[in-house]
Image (cartoon, rainbow, N blue to C red; front, side, top):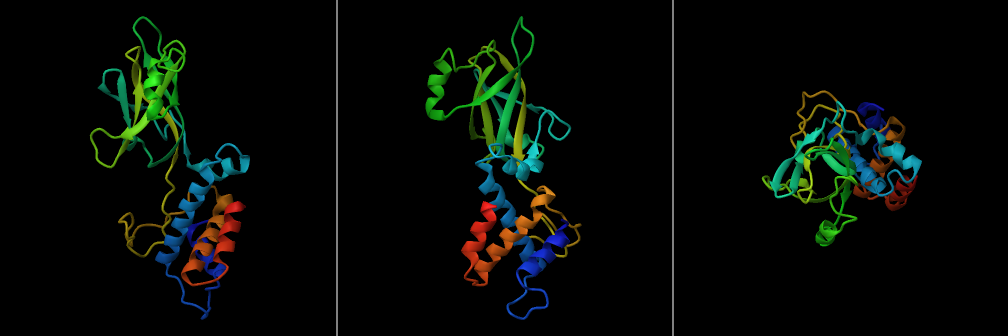
Length: 241
């Protein structure tokens, strides 16, 4: 659905077209509700992503694959002995959730290998680095990593890889779910400064099959603001579909 179709669908479902029952929503307000619904939809579905085919379908258009033209290999920087950093800010799309991660490793006297990234928690990191089975290992292609603050940018995040100086990481291939686009009907300046009134419309980048469900969630959210008593029931129904 185009954004103008989602706006119209919202008005129909909210009983706002040519209706004097309640105040009409402005395009900017509908966009706000739709964007809130998109984020709630993604957050609600991510926990079971790739466990249930329907949920995989729902988020598939947000999954960025690497290395591809969409997301080329991401460079890393050595920040300590045997520790490499990949800045999430260096990704081509705004990052939401990691799906899979591999990296290119080299070792003197050996051919390059693709290492399988393995996320570990900070409280087990020391144990992992000392383990002959879980720790960094070029032959077994083990590459533990953790998330942390970007070493040079406040409020930004990075992924840190540990090699125990057994090999060198040159680039990383992250598969991740990007933050959905903010939809925009047009004709106004968005509060976050992303769009101005003369920008062209921006459509929802979730798979089209689920655009009507986004409208349903937005209408349920809006019901709370206009004091419709069936808000909770509507919202629960749209999330469980």
